[in-house]
Length: 408
Image: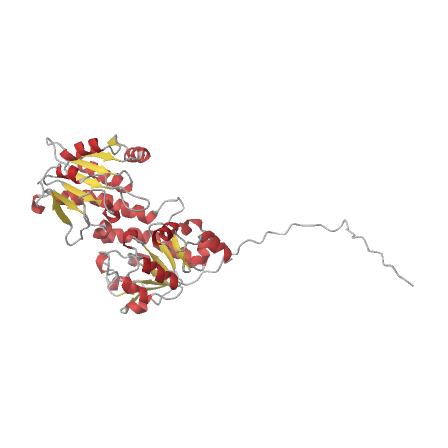
């Protein structure tokens, strides 16, 4: 006999109620304790330190371990005692410093530090593109380093907070430096920057209307100087006028107008920026030769080649050179000359960032949640994720977003 089983139809009772399940989202990881180290900088005329004692105290109180190399804060006038008092561990041996998981530096990774890097380490530091070398990037890639740069790090508003702070310091400092070299004691013209009642104000030319140019203009105006600003970006010129709130003399970079104004100025400031590569030279040697003897040129853009043809790199020890009897100031790292203020500005950005990294359970976890942090990462677990660096040094580029997505 054959038995044929009848398939039962599904039966739905009116007494059963259906509810939608909550979507399971990405679960926030538990916080972790970070091992943070601050080495002493020995290159690039660097006096700044990336974390102040107050910032270190906050990190230690939040359960993180902070190691500071002996005399690391000396350039910014922070002593080992200042760090020890807030709970930091003072380390004498540089090799021991580089055993930590997370290294925070105020200068780029140097040749002498390369052999000390540990496998899978995280480094937060500047890049300083003009002094970056291929073999340094290659060694960091070999060591599977994750690296975040000061220059490209962005905040929630889409701005670069560390670059902006350093530009504000450089812009404000420019006029103090110029005033110093107009002084008779420094073989200047013997002119008081700004002037006084009954005497025509000193004339200041600023080339570049970015953050440096804006703060240089603010300081010069506050001192009583006559200010003229040049830039080819009309939007930047409008923004500068709106931010300062005073009607300024502005012009595009027209060579004849620029040459005419340089002939009679007391101070000329080079504050042009370049998104990639060298800063364009807009002031020729001939223009400089027509300037008044004893006038001062401060080329802030010297770290990207300078915008005056006669500019050359100088140091904090020997900051000036004279050409055509015009004083040229070409120190590339101006904020380092005001190391304590600059250190506090960097620390104000990095301390909250490090707290967030700890709260999220590590940088890799924070990168998944926070898109702004991704802008600052130029190397992720040994893969170069910055397109400009890969093009410049002819190294393999990997898209960071794809890299992060593939590891989830």
